[in-house]
Image (cartoon, rainbow, N blue to C red; front, side, top):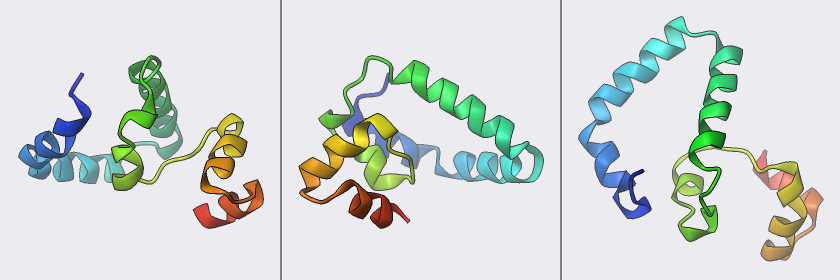
Length: 89
């Protein structure tokens, strides 16, 4: 696995390839199936990873917060769960 501090650097090296791949997926992939595959892959890759170590994904990509983490995350941000949900759009 790539160290969190190197993700941005590695992504930049493959930026054109990534754009081409995303374009291909948008035009050819079944969105629901792709989401399911991505979720499964994400769960496998991050099963033993503590996201609190860097949070770069949260800065660079739109994602979701697991329902079981909403209370804890809202408490950390010193807002209510409802305010957190509303802020996520």
